[in-house]
Image (cartoon, rainbow, N blue to C red; front, top):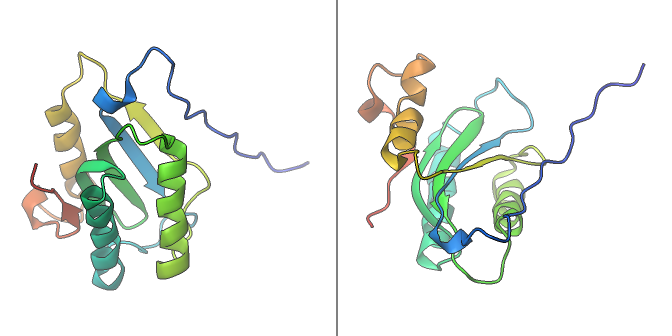
Length: 150
């Protein structure tokens, strides 16, 4: 019996959505789950630096990035630069694999925040992730987070 394979997730933004005015909650997972690959300083520092670099170059506008041991959470928007979200995230994942030797899963989870969803609620959810995982007792104790100045 063949093993089940993961389906490709659609990341196409509907034509009626102005993606330049949208905020997305993204989760990118390591290929090997359950092993601490990201929440170590030697990896976390350059990983967060590349996020900031992409912010400075207007490749994306990450408002919050939090590294967990085997996945990354983003609150991010994308400029109108002719690139698809899928391409932008894939290029970042490619850099991560080449430079840091971190293998990330082929796809990623993406959720566009709707009008009735609060960006602050999602940010709180992200910031409390290390607390829920038992890694720290309060969010401000988790060192692997980037909150760029707006």
